[in-house]
Length: 272
Ligand SMILES: C[S@@+](CC[C@H](N)C(=O)[O-])C[C@H]1O[C@@H](n2cnc3c(N)ncnc32)[C@H](O)[C@@H]1O
Image (cartoon, rainbow, N blue to C red):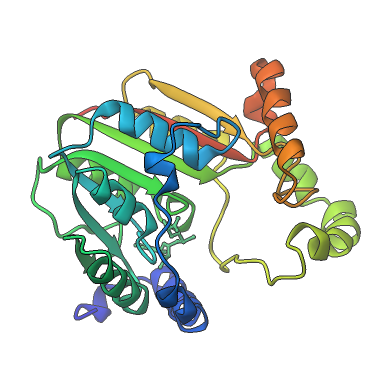
């Protein structure tokens, strides 16, 4: 970034982490982009990403100006572009953006990828019809980012986010000595299947307070669903039957799913 001097210490740490993340994941350039979530009519109702796309596709994407926040290697940008949207994506990491640009070129997709922090966007006012945030809000300063999202969005624009989440009650349990010092070290290898967890020093799962803050910048949400009660916390996400069961449990327990869920999907109209 040219304006390195304006980057915060938190952004600098995120940048360094994701530079390395891009470096060790270069093989992604060899893999084809998977567009299943756009084209497959059999929707995976138990999967937050699929549900996010079901919601966005129902909005009609053709010709819409869509912003993908913290786009990383560009997966969401590619899919939304393939569905007919005019997509722009940004991220802090130039290395991730390089991968995204190369993949977009390979897929023949015309997407503008730019380097910038979520807290200080370079886009014009009132430009976007839809803003999509997947696994980015828990890396950023939410009040600053949300005011930027509102600034660059047209009146009546849609904001959709899909984020890791932990109610402050479950957060307390997670951070208790028993879980943190005893249970977690025993479970981590199983849950992450031996891989190093992808967690930065500064990221914080969204809590119900963050959700309330985000919701206060929107009209009544059109979609608000919780996922991952046990999956990704105690068991890995590779067991399909358990993923479905996990989602069914959260549907049955919907009055308290906001306490139990480990992921939240929200979509609705932004207040201007
Ligand atoms: C967990 S990754 C998610 C990437 C992508 N949204 C996805 O779901 O695959 C978080 C991304 O946010 C970016 N990031 C972290 N802090 C940021 C900030 N303040 N502004 C913009 N991007 C940021 C990182 O570089 C990284 O690509």
